[in-house]
Image (cartoon, rainbow, N blue to C red; front, top):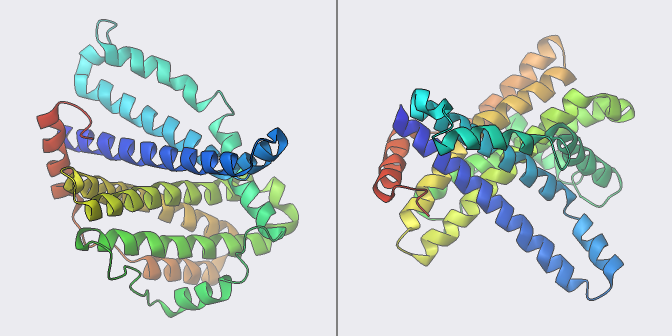
Amino acid sequence: MIKKKLANMAADTYAAETLALRTVGMVEDARVAAGEDREAQLNAIEEFAIECSIAKIFGSEALGRSADEGVQTFGGYGFMDEYPISHVYRDNRINRIFEGTNEINRLVTSGTLFRRAMGGKIDIFSVFPEIEAQISSGEAQDFAGTQTPDVLRESVNLVERAKRAAVYSMMKGAMKFMSTMEDEQEFLEYSANQMIALYAMDSAVGRAIEAVRAGGVDAHTHALLAQLAVLRLLPEARAAMEGALTMTFEGDERREELAKIRRYLGDPATDGVPVQREIAGIVAEKGAYPL
């Protein structure tokens, strides 16, 4: 059980640092492309408000989970001032509050998406009919191309299916709540939670694919961490989808919609326990986060 904690902390860290680096890279590229005009730079950076809010939410909550598990791992010592983990546990709590509470950032995340979709800045409406047909058929295609490393094919397919299921659940809700969206904070939270999990999973898998293709000494570790990140975050995305659909539909229609999503998403074939054990072994051997 302690190995599980170590592995989950490592996977959380991998996803958090990857999505943060990805976001910083996009922001910096946009800033440089805007030239020397300050207002143009700020407008370019603002385009990444969603990603920045997600980075703040996921990073602070991943740190909170890791600090909590760290205290649990140390047992009674974890609560004593002589041990550094007690300071981490105490000091990290503010991170979910300042720089905009995570609740506010969730509203920013999904609210910005829906505003941009309605304004035509993000094209969701044109792809929705195809996604709706795919989910209604219950048959998910193989999204992993020939260049996808074998070790990450399942992860790619799980993430790609989750992306389409998220568009489906959010669009169905948006159709119902369009006129009252600002008052439907629970729906906005469900939508944001899908986006957070998806951005974290997609970032982790993308980084791992690059690492495996490069063939470095840590390539296998990258793949393991991305696999576990997907296995951990997919249930969170699924729960948020189901929450959104539960708000949107009633009775038999609700049951049918939930069954569609569950059938389309499917279940991972990979057993997460061996992945956890292998990651924990790498962490223990290094005595730290493995990358």
